[in-house]
Length: 477
Ligand code: NAD
Image 1 (cartoon, rainbow, N blue to C red):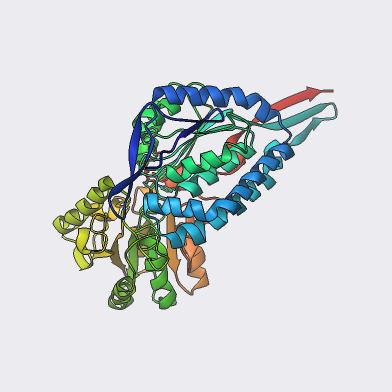
Image 2: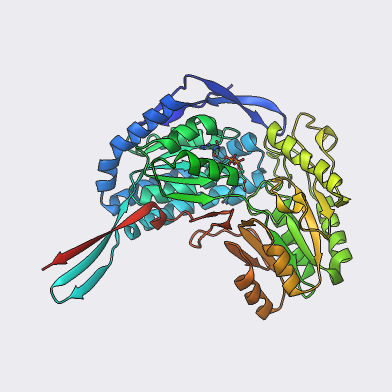
């Protein structure tokens, strides 16, 4: 089995302990990854701290040069990295190869272009003999904790901007899927000076917690669940640190009767909660709000669209929906199917699990696309993030009622609106409590626009300025 290593201080180091990583389409272990702990966390913080003075002192354009080299690595190794990630977390190759990896080369180029933004300050003429200045400074060692659902994309969205701003970086990938990021570490060991980029794999509550508690760390950025955001806040409370939290969601996808229903059907199924990553997407539109006048028609359309999905080997480009990432996540998703029944939600279709769903791959973690219907947005299946191919349809009668149901959630990550009415589109952009509102589209996250949440979906968003702090100077001439 391949054995992946940590990248610490420019060296690829075997860990004292390792753990298996499993292919979710087969249920079989296929590689080992480091199970790091306090010793690895200490070594990484020490290496990143040692590299910080020289890295942060580089002129911004010299840092940009390194970031462009990363973009070139993505250009050369896109297919290898896409296949590795698909095998490791089950995200279909169509997404990793055609959607994620091509975007990475662009993202690192974009971050290279933004290195100068991180060193721009303001000049304020406070009086004829008094000059005010601001300067932006990096935080020092930035710890970037990432989830398993799109490791390379999340790695890039954090590390590229943190490095552009002059921080040194430690990335902690998720234990369920670290292989693609660790392989990237092998490739990038040659690119950066030792200690500038470090990658440490292990359990969240072990190496993750040791990193976020460490006094040598100046900034934390997490993409993960709300519970982990809360745990990190508690763990790091003694050594106050600025945080960026991109957390969970229960996003509403709202269909009005005046919408283009072909596009809306595509937008609430294929581009939202079912395909791509089998609903394991933070922005999944897992609450589908449908106007009563088109209720039966839309349920029929969604069922037909889902019947056309191809479940199977995620490495096959013909596959449109893959497995659940791990045995633990499979248990979680199936427990919500039981809960939906107990809570009295009506099953519209799906709720099939296990080997029957994809007989050719009986060891995989399979859940068929599933839709429930209910009038009651207070049900737990309407309020809690399931993170699987399971949606709940909820009817509404008016625009006001749709907004009220949509906002009745502890989460506020994203929302979709399907309408041809321009006035309504703008009203909903204004009134929906979420970090992003898509109108007649879904799941577009172009670099250049902020992406983050409100309420329990987090705060802040990855960008160059997010990894800097401002200092003021007042100069009497
Ligand atoms: P998770 O919160 O379980 O784990 C995320 C990362 O945090 C992992 O690397 C994990 O090891 C680490 N971690 C866990 N406990 C920790 C601790 N106490 N200290 C330090 N690190 C710790 O999330 P997951 O299951 O990997 O991913 C799914 C979640 O991520 C969902 O809630 C999803 O909505 C969210 N997510 C959000 C976005 C976004 O941009 N908003 C994107 C993708 C995923």
